[in-house]
Length: 454
Image (cartoon, rainbow, N blue to C red; front, side, top):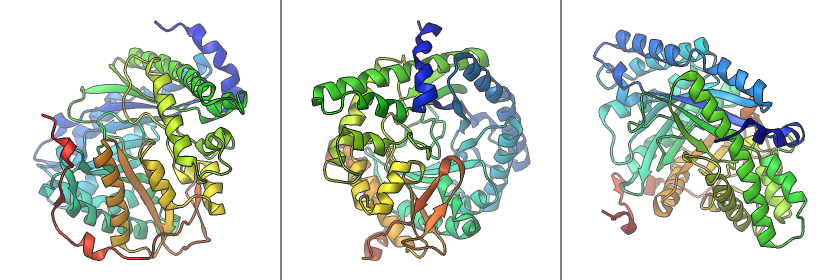
């Protein structure tokens, strides 16, 4: 049982070290909104979301005031829309109408984002899945609060390379349709492998079909708190370093547990999971890269970075899992380039490359996240990068993802501005050698041998 007194020691963390609860995300199942009539489906979707989530934002603000810890985002995740619209959507424009309905619902309840304009196609695409995927560029270009994700692979099924090829084209088209804002539509589009059903973090959040009708999932944060704690053990042994990270992660997660329990109680829906991920922001002092440099590398991306990140990720999980009844989602360290000032600086200086970030993906949460690349990058090259990330996830039995932003009209040396939590980023170079012949092959990459565990 958590006592409110446990939160008292976090005052300094909040005031000086950027401690926050990154998100309260309400998952809402839309399976019972499905039907053959598009207008009726849209009406049911709007009514269900606005009914369940009408008090989500105000409840989050009340809890934040009472415990003195900022709750940065209030979000909603929904059933993958390709499932909900399968019977009523006969064109991509039909799916866009559902997306517009979701945008109206987001504005009505005041949330930052709704995630779940999604399709799960790790083994193959239904006609409904393909219609939704092809609607993504238009849907994201006419909305501001909707996030989209496509899961193209898993350890059990392999990688759907037809979907990977299509997603390279979709990313490029989304970039073109939102080029007036530095191709910002791509900041709300992510391609995943092994996507979890209970992730509270955007843009990959959706509510899996194994979840209840409504649920509260909370994502914690606190890179600044970890960095500050490590400053006090500078030069100490790895044992001391690891113990310090674990103890700090425990404290951060306890705050998240309190928030999750209170939000679930007040909103009258079950508590789902705490996601332990260290999620940075563009604010100075709230950076995962700064932690890696405090551990001992001169700049994020230098030799030793991957080992330092592996250590950090493992200790965060070990400390956090003891502090919560239920842990899920992604639960590790995020390395989104545009959302982490230390990563931005490392990329701008040349210390951090896409290839190094790919290696770091093997030991952290998610993967190549919020990376701005030249606007003239080929769709096949984007698909190749997506395939590489999916392969890492498939073979290593973990969630990986690619959120790439080909910024139309910009090239290496330029800078992209996305605003708010999405931050800003230097345009990073990509390998100029092609992979068209690889990407043009049809079918699936088979699942690895170790997937056969039944």
